[in-house]
Image (tube, rainbow, N blue to C red; front, side, top):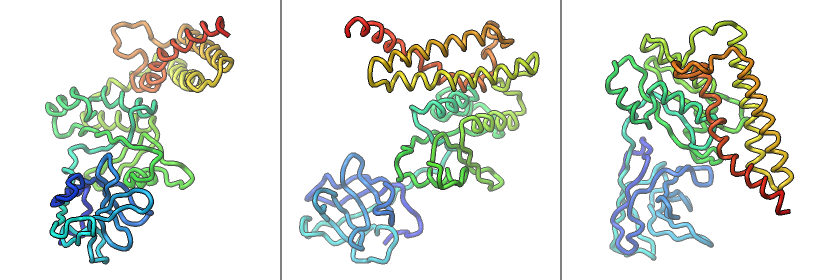
Length: 333
């Protein structure tokens, strides 16, 4: 029948001639009614799910859906690969066949649960690329081929929807890192398994960046360019921390306020606050001991810290059209 011990990542359906659109690959899609797993054909309402106390090939629609095939064995935990009975809407001689598919063993030592829009996830992306361990970056792949086995393996990005409950691996991994049930699972999240069978599960972008930088340095024996040399004074070091804190605390809320402004008055107020925040940041740079004008340095105060501000600063050009529109709107109302 099938290997009932191994959950497939996807199931290949074949043998249907009356409705050939039902053939194809069905991917793991969480659970149905919080119980058993289900598989869905992408961009469709076609499912392999346990419904009416049996495994069915089923199309969901109002009011009750349509069953095309069902299996008489109600005791198995996973859908059998053969032995299905055609429902009345299928051809009586059709033979449904299922084939289990499993993902290739991971080539990366770590997985980063992330998405493309989160600024905190982008902080980690920047550090990964600078360290040369980002699986999605071509230069990182080339570097990995030319390094020794002691080099930290690549980190694979896995995009997740933090508002969905279907990504069970992400949810379970998050609660291993942060076991509070009152906290909604959040990104970024770094997970992995070390050679000594220890499980790595780290939440919070700051902690993930520090871990990756130190891990690469430890494995390669080379001083990471992302960990800055000791500053000229403790005061200079403190100023870097204050600068990072100020950028994320002062500018980020202004950007969000501009994008979420519902009327002209709120938009004008948000822009005024953004200009005040930028003036504050400019004053801090002028008064600080941070070496911001040294053209020979790749990062003006250590990329590990610079990465914490980059996603915020990169968003600033998006606010220019808003400021221009606001200025013109004053003459139109």
